Amino acid sequence: MPPERASAFAPGRVNLIGEFTDYNDGLALPFAITEGVTVRAEAIPARRIEALAADLDERDVFELDRPEPMPGWRAFVRGAAGELAGAGYALRGARLEIRGSVPRGAGLSSSAALEVALCLALIALTERPPPDRRDLARLCSRVENEWVGARTGLLDQLASLYGERDRALRIDFRSLEVRPVALDLAGWRLVTLDSGERHANAASGYNERRAECARAAEELGLSSLRDATIAMADDLPSPLGDRVRHVVGENERVEAAAAALEGGDLAELARLLNASHASLRDLYAVSTPAVEATVKRLREAGAAGARIVGGGFGGHVLGLLPPAAAAPEDAHEVRPGPGAGLVDEGPRA
Image (tube, rainbow, N blue to C red; front, side, top):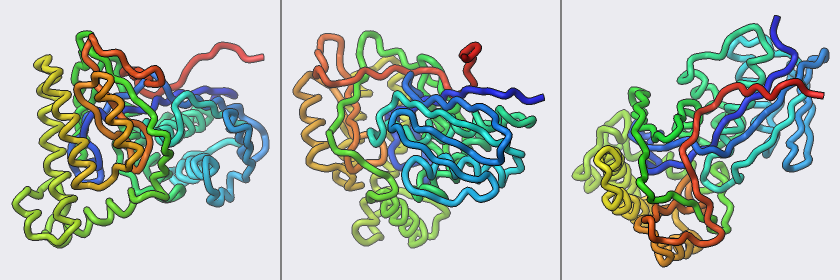
């Protein structure tokens, strides 16, 4: 018999380097963080979902047989139920309580954490085990693509599902190979600093950038920009050539960053973060004045490297600080934590 109650936690993530490469079959180096989303699920006899977003004090109720799309956080809940049913899961009616510790719209992937935690909690109330983590990542990505409207890749979901304590993950989005890379900072610290500007992937230029990459690949006769070269960019009109230059250069920076971590060369890692930000600003055009001011604040505080993270157009900036540097008071230190899974919270009253 399946359990009557289940709780699932899924972490957010910081992408150390490798931005906008996932949907181009490229490389990235994210790590799961200790903050995330917890979903508590309790089976009910009715064929409906009753969801409470506790942090917002908002509710949603819908019939399991008719999960119609809705805006905001409700789209994730309805999408998770719809995609799981489409994948053959005999979902039970459930009362859900959703709580999060990762800031929304900050570039730390609260959306993927929500998708993953919802799916794990709902699956736990059925008689079927969860799918392979790669398949679950694909299912969660469909929630974001088809129900939320953000044409994201698999980076956030894979990082949340495969996260390991004290490790980053080198992800190859062509093969979906995930290789842990030790994240030993030797006294250096990684912090995020809020630009004060919220981003929303679906409403920002994120979808436009993805479409530009698809057009560039088509004009070059390639299946994806993974096979592009810098020289090919010269044959494309603006801004498509710049998008190609960023993707090609960013893939190279991921490999160099993994090598820097394995060799304990944190100064080189900082240089690569700065180069990534310059590319995101100048070639991919996803920075804003608020983000640039935040990068400047971190560097003035002593950060050796800093760059925008997440979907762009706002959100947080990641900084790498040497041991002697003092982060701004409102900065938040991020540490690599374990990946998503069910959590045992003991008996509930």
